[in-house]
Image (cartoon, rainbow, N blue to C red):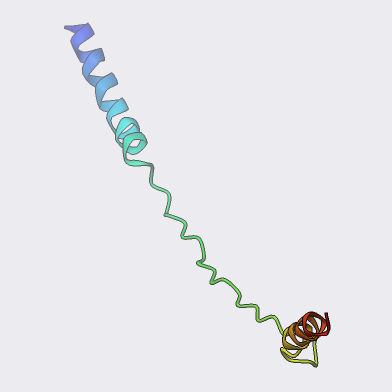
Length: 67
């Protein structure tokens, strides 16, 4: 009878410990801040604004015509 009383007392003492361990404890959940990605716009430093490729094409055509 003594061993049954000890077993019941031990089980009653361990129930709160086991349920908090299984449930994740009593600590408040910590929410991490959500960071939005920064938008970076790259600007071209060229003042030609797309004239280099047509000029090179013109030079290639002029070189082909002169041969």
